[in-house]
Amino acid sequence: MFNPEKETLPREKLEKLQIAQFKKTLKYLKNSRSKLKEKYKHVEPEDITSLEDLKNLPLTTKDELKDCYPFDHIAIDPSSCARMHLSSGTTGVPVINAMTRNDIAQWSEMMARCLACAGLTEKDRIQIMPSFGLFNGGFGFHYGAERLGCFVVPAGAGRSLMQLKLIKELEVTAIGAIASYPARLIEVARESDFDFRQTKLKVAILGAETWSDEYRNRIEEEMGVKTFDIIGLTETGGIGLGIDCPARSGIHIWEDHYIVEIINPGNDKPVELGEEGEMVITTITREGLPLIRYRTRDISRILTYEKCDCGRTHVRVDRIKGRTDDMLKIKGVNFYPSQVEQILLKYKGLSPYYQLVIETVKGKDEMTIIVEKVNNGITQKELEHLDLELYDFLAFHSKIQIVPEGTIQRVPGKAMRIIDKRKKT
Image 1 (cartoon, rainbow, N blue to C red):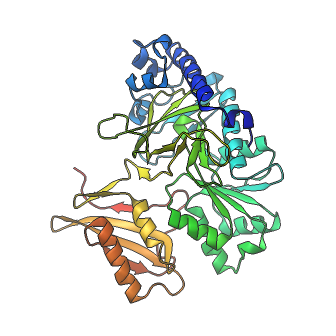
Image 2 (cartoon, one colour):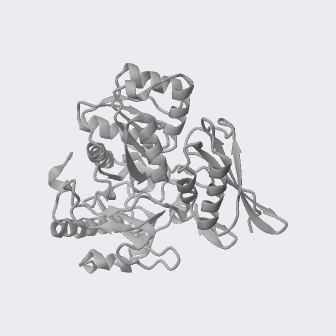
Image 3 (cartoon, rainbow, N blue to C red):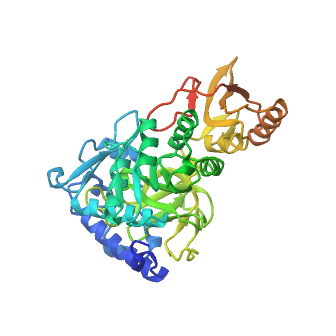
């Protein structure tokens, strides 16, 4: 553990700390320059006596932050901040998070905790593969690794042959990357006769995208590493909100800095413990962009508040299943792309590269699953079994198109899984 005292706080002390920090955050926000403070003009810090009271406060949405572009949602004058990052969305108005020096220090600690949770120490060498720029991933890994004392290889995004060369020649022990990128590394390694097991690499910390347990198994088997699922978003302070531990019993969220809730995205009401819904985050130590009950759009559930086998006491949530805006509805069936991925990757002859193409044919929705084959692909019998599995899950027949490896375009950044050709109404 990077901070054993804080990471093992008893539940009672943790909740008292959360209430105290929330009251400070509410008072700070009400006295700030942020336009968001108007939401809380009838709420006073003294009104909050328990975490249950938060459920009476209004939710905050990404659209509200977009309406404040560029800096009207920032609590202090941007000239007093040290840096900024931008939400990674590719369309519409982005969201800026301007960070103070204290915010960067907080971010560094959260990431150091995450790296330590993945087993890293000051003796490790970590290669950082997300980009260094407006996207927060590269800097987040960098801050955390420096705080922990690791040797940093700031490779940035792309140039896969170079990435492999650095892993081997610099004796890198850990990588941080967008979740879909190891699939590309494995592909390039296969083409160049690169053997991961002839390197010192032992850990892959992956995030920024939803990825299935089947994909996780594939990466660990091919690369000979232990993978860790790290979460976070620009609006709440960047990557490092939480990570799973070697116990693999959920993602720890650092509750001395964040309060997590799960709500029903249909009616905005809190759900029962263990029930799936949309994750809502309240920041209680951020200065540039303090957020109260922010709708993340991520679908998860609270697993437990009990102490983990790793010794940490902070709440554990399930791995992210998808985003509310990622959910597909075809022929009346709601599902997430990651659920299709779970089925596809059970077959060793299919690659992690796939796309779901949705279009309207003769007035009806149709879906084609385009997936690349690896090695010799799959047999006709396996294809028939895959078709049956997909039908059992989806309750409608989809077309399965198996294409040669390399057919689907490799793009920098997050993988493009969905091509929706239906007319938007």
